[in-house]
Image (tube, rainbow, N blue to C red):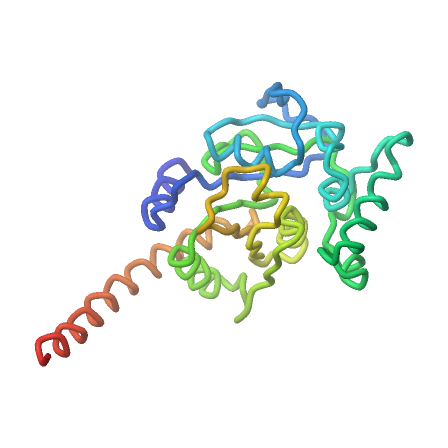
Length: 237
């Protein structure tokens, strides 16, 4: 598994590690609980996993982001229950969201007992989603590999906000989903201005990697062909 993830990172030239995320029904015995203190949003945990850390969170660790709690099917405590409608109302008022978009925001089917995060090479838990942060050139290879693996079906669901919605969307549809990075995510994390996220269904990760290796080979061949074509015209100037 480590070798395969290393290969993916090298093929794509990723700045940071691909990570796996699991929505678990019980606490994972092989992981420690998150010990980094309160965070502004669940997407902060993506950053920590991309830095190489492995851990699990409890629902309460996600309460500081009402929207993120919503996408993860995590109920806020009674004394904070008004934070979700208040946040959505503010987003609609500022035209960050349109009211008609709200019902379509993907959510998990049931609340997780724990949410686990780790570099994709970890075998500490089963991944529901593998998440990668990619630039445009890298996204091209990811999308081509997803097409060949049958997890894009000729198109890909893409959104900007909220970024965390791509996790339940990918897990439920078993298709890749893309987020260009919402304003909250770009505030709370270290995602680059040139990067976006692609969520890959965990159950299809191995298929995706095999197709990515194939895509790399074909793109290298075509790259050589196009360079030769370009050289012909450069020589004619």
